[in-house]
Length: 396
Image 1 (cartoon, rainbow, N blue to C red):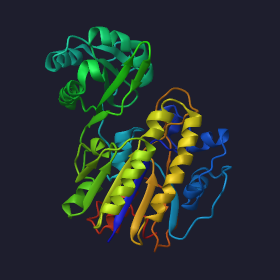
Image 2: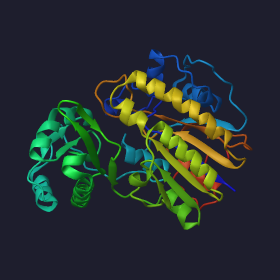
Image 3: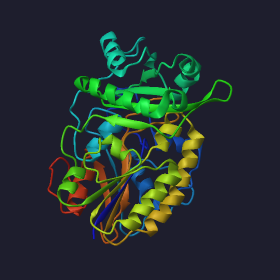
């Protein structure tokens, strides 16, 4: 039995992207810059080669507590992103074997940010009286500034970021969750002709007195990947593909045979362990740990990110103990989101690629030229058709 346990530490970049300057991200280094503020205690990740991956990528080392030696079967390296993006979709699509050459729709930083023809079509087809916001914003800031007006008018809050996205925030109780989802489906359908990457439902709760907070009922409506992913190849060859967290939404459900909702580092780890115990055939367990990005990266919470890394590392020990001899564990990231960096947006960085295959002698895999090498490695491990987009590191 051959399984893949694929863990994405959403936004955990390791810096030194050769084209970071083109994105305004020169000097961004999520892992390295956090380590300058906190001496991290992450022995399980170092035992799988994370520190060595950083050293390969940056030609320097970091000060960490408990620098464990790498264990037998571990492998480590870094990867560049070949696609011209630094967002969730381009990162996940590429690691799944699809290079994104699609010119997605991005919105300039102006007010109003959305064009009149788009807004008018949304008002008509979405059956709403108007919108609030209509600008670039962070999710926390905009509900704090417009939450009360939304409650008074019932107009949904529309905003965007440097990503190809329209985000729609409403009060979960007064506006209604199902009504929000239906509106997002309408906006998704409208925005397909513009090649918009994602429409995201951002429900929140609370009031002006107690404060507004986002709930866990976020839902992403993604554009379909512009090619066939390793997930779809796996399904075609009778393998099970289990998407945990927001994986199902990222791929629009394509290539996912089982959707598992879970929240927070605890919930996502628990569900990953649960599916490892239940999957008794060849397949992929694919988990996105969104908290690193959503809770700490975008909010520029350095301490929170550091504590999150240490807690994830502790729980990772449980996953390592459950690995079977032919399980391929891959740990990576989809982009960076350096909490020490200016602004609140993602950062263009290389990402770590490290993990374990017990009976292998892979060790160092170097700096890969594309995230798609992960897909090619999974194809080799599960004996799937070779998409020829990347190069497997299993036979290095």
